[in-house]
Image (cartoon, rainbow, N blue to C red; front, side, top):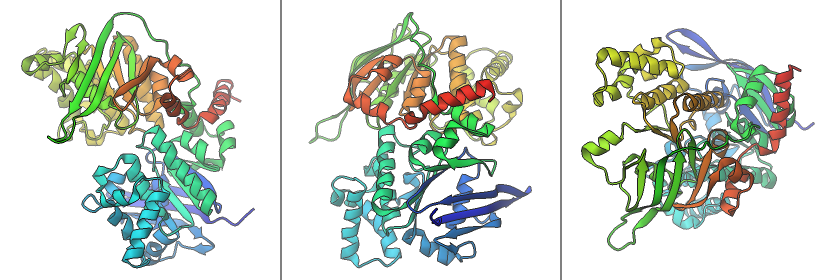
Length: 545
């Protein structure tokens, strides 16, 4: 066995706060071999981010390493000064953070952002750095690298910005790349391209990868070994295939059971009945200036949704799915085409008529951290829609709010709290309760679980299915995560460049996709090669063996 490039032994970290010392990492140990790939898997609060912050010298001031050792390339780096660690970060260790929007300077051009790491480490003169920037952008698969280098970050897609971060991480040919949730916010096809790029670096340069993720399916596809963290401690570790096929710890089994990509149940059958949503030949064009032709974001889109069913709109960023949802909700007016909800034409509605329509069509947003007013308590948040529409007196509103809170499985004690005092899953339950308190016919769900950990995501998906069964509510579900769509939706429309390229029952479309684009989307779902492992796991759970 080769000597590990990175060896973490009995690492322990605490945070100091008003309540005293709070343990964050408890005697964590793992190795990363040269050219190897190891995944740290766990939910928020599991300790995985604190672990990598410690080994990278990026631990915040409140954090303190209280034990353990980190060896890199045979040297104990736990005693290194911040200056020594900063020197290693970039030259020998590359770091890819999660959010490119917060990691790239928005007022500096892409090339300048990328050149910074080269200038800091005094790599070459200005001409050499400019050539290296173009070379790096080309290496990570960004077309027209010279043009992109002159653009600002906001002019690039999310996938391109993440590739810029990878280019920065590999600029000085490091021996190790630490990727912290580097693909969690990306479309499945872009995610696959970014992960393919990391795999290529391993093959071409012998670069080792430490992949930090809450997605066990990504770990299954890309890691040689997996380390499962919970509450700051290693619950299970070993070769990826072994851990997935023979999970020993209940927490690992829970992660496997909740991961949508590992779900072995068939997609639900579409129910018959009345069509509640009818979208016909929908077109939306945006003006780009007098000398440029309009941009057609939605192009002749048509679909119907039957009462009590879920219809998914899927596609990559820029496919038109979010614009379609905004048209359905009346936030945008169509250029042409028609939209009917519960038998009423809603396109063209304005003023009081549009406001009344909103009582029948509600929305749950992607991010539960920003969709609730942090200054209001939960009772005020849930009461506000009833008060705005003049529904009931104060006593009736209080009763309705408590009934709605019970429907989303939250205790009455939550009513006095503010959003900042709730977990992400609890906040999303409040957002769902707020959408349902008016008893709408249709709820538009815009990526409602993409910001949540896998077990919380599974809880919200089960809640949505239960509410649909009990209340008969109809969902229009927007998602880039096809594994989630397969678990929840009955029918699907696949959008590309504003057009519907394929539609039908989820089971039919996912099993026998006709279009190459749909086939590419489905093939990009991570973890598909491990479905058999999930089946074995389910059998293990049922039999208790």
